[in-house]
Image 1 (cartoon, rainbow, N blue to C red):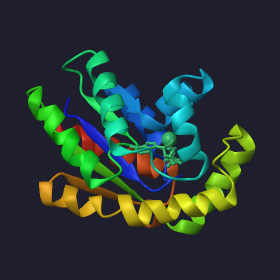
Image 2 (cartoon, protein in one colour; image 1 turned 180 degrees about the vertical axis):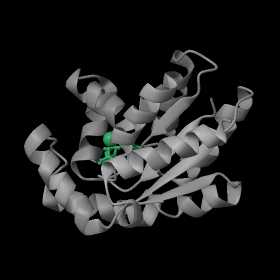
Image 3 (cartoon, rainbow, N blue to C red; image 1 turned 90 degrees about the vertical axis):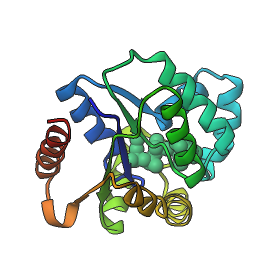
Length: 193
Ligand code: ATP
Ligand code: MG
């Protein structure tokens, strides 16, 4: 399987669709958000550093993220394809990922971009706050995360377009979770045919 980068704003459903793809195609999955939350929960040095950034809706510094990512990638079984969920979030991370994969005789594969209107994102994140109690899912931090997304992450969409591997999925067109899942799985299947 080709590697997959799943890309979109906070609350766009990266985790949800990653699970669907992973289960259907038996791929590896790295969620950098989940990795960081586990480090915080376990009280590690890395967790202590990450907490301040996450609570403020800011990104963890690139060099730190890149090291974490490479070691997670190397811990997964080779050859099955990996879903990158929440990484890369900056151009520097994208360049580093590309280089890391090339050094291992691998490549970026395909990028899946989830396009969801901001009012829908806010509604979902506030609902998730009630269900999961994530400390960064409060209105003020969510606004900061949207701002960081627009300034630092969204420009990457064009970077992937220039790589010729961007595939977009628009909530405004597909309208339901099932519609999104069906379209995404079909596209992944087609890419690997
Ligand atoms: P989603 O709702 O789609 O899962 P999200 O943006 O709400 O997305 P996570 O991807 O879990 O949530 O990220 C949570 C926080 O972890 C980010 O706000 C950021 O502080 C930190 N983080 C996660 N991935 C990265 C990364 N690649 N680079 C820098 N910081 C990151
Ligand atoms: Mg997530």
